[in-house]
Image (cartoon, rainbow over all chains, first blue to last red; front, side, top):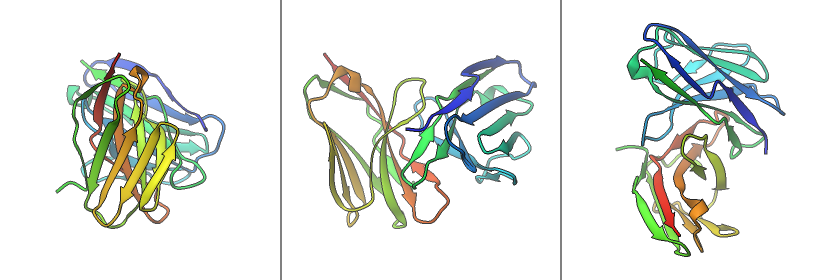
Length: 115
Length: 112
């Protein structure tokens, strides 16, 4: 199957700082990528849909000014958590669809801890 | 009512047992049904998918969908300690938005 990578795998930052997480499709192009957040013992919650060359689409309740998404190329989407606070500490996972609906490839996730 | 309901467990079974994992859903628009396996601190990995009522088998795994009851299941035969993980059901409606709706996940432990 196709491979999606994320960087960094783990990040610890101070409250008030910004953190950028990268999601890359390594061997295929992705015009669409998805960003999820997963709290401990909870399911994946879709935050936003990242669209190459256009604005991201955010799910209800997700602050677009706090979670900045940039999909600058067909293989890279970035999520920037601005002015991070401890309640933003979570596991952030990206995914990219393959050629059919049932194929969605997930990255390994980024664990963010805000002190 | 949540769109997808899944008992979070935890579920603990002895090695070799048959495991049954289940989800129910309320959205009739869901057409595609997937099961993902997620090891601790890792991204989900697709195990099986199906889009019609009935059974689909892949090795030790069988996915079952009953659209009339809005109920899906994943069966694991001859369970192994390496099957210990969180199993998430996920569903997709038709169209081209690719947006998955996940269940909460069931934590499974297979004891040697």
